[in-house]
Image 1 (cartoon, helix red, strand yellow):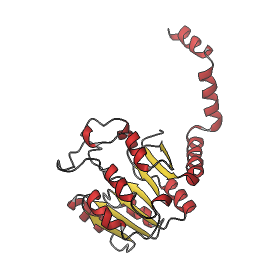
Image 2 (tube, one colour; image 1 turned 60 degrees about the horizontal axis):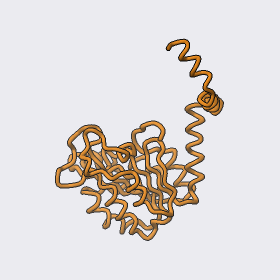
Image 3 (tube, rainbow, N blue to C red; image 1 turned 90 degrees about the horizontal axis):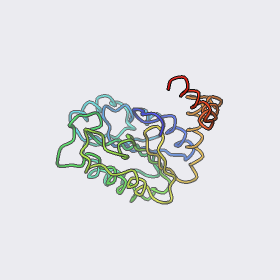
Image 4 (cartoon, rainbow, N blue to C red; image 1 turned 120 degrees about the vertical axis):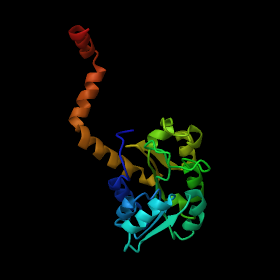
Length: 226
């Protein structure tokens, strides 16, 4: 899976947007507007949804003057259908509209803490769905709920992967669920190889694999410390 990162992986988003010629982006979970501002430097127009009124007000202030950013206040499954009617073509979707990730009770009890399946259902009805790219934050939570989550509100990774569709390449890297058209898989693979090279070095990585395949070092360790 890689490391736990915070915020949109901008280098991956950039590579995918350029390879696919994407001109639009849709985000759920605006928070203070940082991701929307980054996406606005990457594509022509950005739509971003924020649930909490007080945070929405801060995001609006932080993105003031950026006419290409369209902020929408509300619960993402309810507002996405109308919002998506304004998106003219394939888009980069950054889905981070779920709550409770850092232990805060920040999601009202009458709505789902993680509405990602409802979000994907709405997005899948867009005419350009097949050519769009989806990135979903906090992948670790789909493999088992965090202590502070309401487990019944969180789908499993298999449910998320199924919602992304059988014709899409789906994987998890650096705490992000990635769903792209099959022809974009090489872009994802190249990005990941670059990350591995930066973090481990190819020679070091090969060396460690060789060590793991050789039981002699285990016996040496047991002899020294056992």
